[in-house]
Image 1 (tube, rainbow, N blue to C red):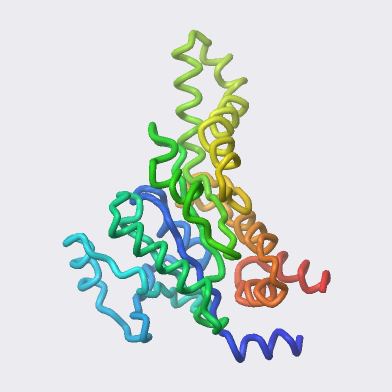
Image 2: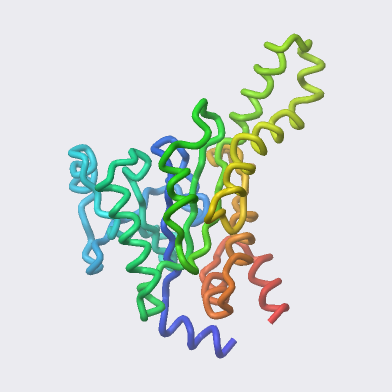
Amino acid sequence: MDKAIDLRSKCKHFRVLIIGRANAGKTTLLKRVCNSVEDPEIYSAKNEKIDVSIVEGSAERGSHDIENQLIFKSNPQFIFHDSRGFESGSVDETDKVKAFITKRAEGNSLAKQLHAIWYCLPTDTNRPLLKIDDKFFGTYGTGKVPVIAIFTKFDGLVNKAYTELVDNGLSEDEAEEKLTEKAEELLQTNFREPLSRATFPPSDYVQLDDMREPTTSCNELIEKTANALTDDTLKLLFVSVQQNNIDVCIRYAVDR
């Protein structure tokens, strides 16, 4: 307990970069993690609060500052950075993300370091992996920063699996029986296998249904992020900022 208190006195936040397409469900996911119904407040790298309308206006003009910090009132111990625009694959945006990861990963201050990356990949799409996804996992690398690949909207992939089965001649009842197996097969073929073969594969994988549904839980994401942190100090920090996943807190407290 004393170690946790000492750690929090030196570093009060856990910092996450979230990467994903515009329709990947990033904001909804973050709201669920922080148990919030409100959008995050936005702060500059100097911790100055920024008017949301200014940020939205910049985004509409095609500019976005990855250094901006997204913080939810419900759990201000998390600091999120959004890679908005990265999926476009433009040289400017990819360079910004690479520079951000390198700068934060190599920083001496634990409070300013990047601690984890959540890479959201929507599974209800006809384009499973984009060229920029291949580049990220095949070329960039993130050093010691763990990357959790999050397969979002898995319920949408289930619907696609059903349609595919029926189109292949199965009756509705037969399609229902093979639905889960087919969806898992598509996930494995279109996402897991290509990522696992990459030069820099994700540290772990999580699949999530529609995060807008009240029954959808992000507990697995929290647990796998904790497991991916090889540094005990970071693991302790991550567990200590949890407010909605008591089981994880208790388990790691007992383990230690």
